[in-house]
Image (cartoon, rainbow, N blue to C red; front, side, top):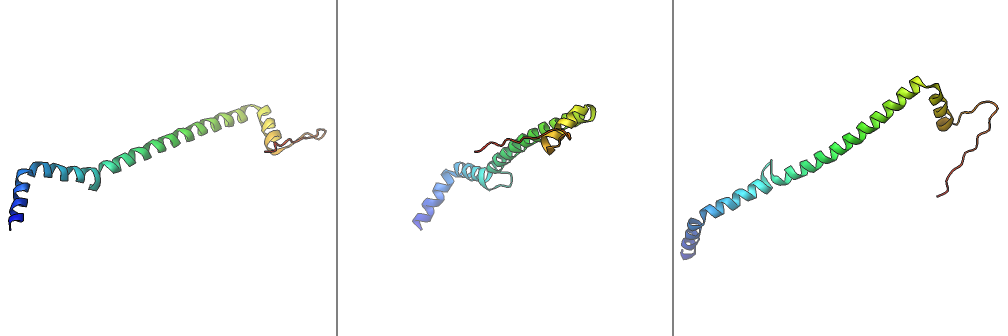
Length: 100
């Protein structure tokens, strides 16, 4: 019975500290909106923003190339020659590959 009384006295003297520690543990680790989850969400948001920036740059580059292809017939010929290896009837094509 003496141990129970000592424990109860300990709780009575340190009730505010114990309450703050329990509250801190709940807020940092156990809650649905815990600090740990919020940090993880912030990391995910930053990586998604980086991906959005990359895709936006790709979109702008593709739009620029599309506009160039619509307005410049020499650009169409350049793409046909480089990407699809097309040629004029009296030309020879040589393809060089890097050995790695």
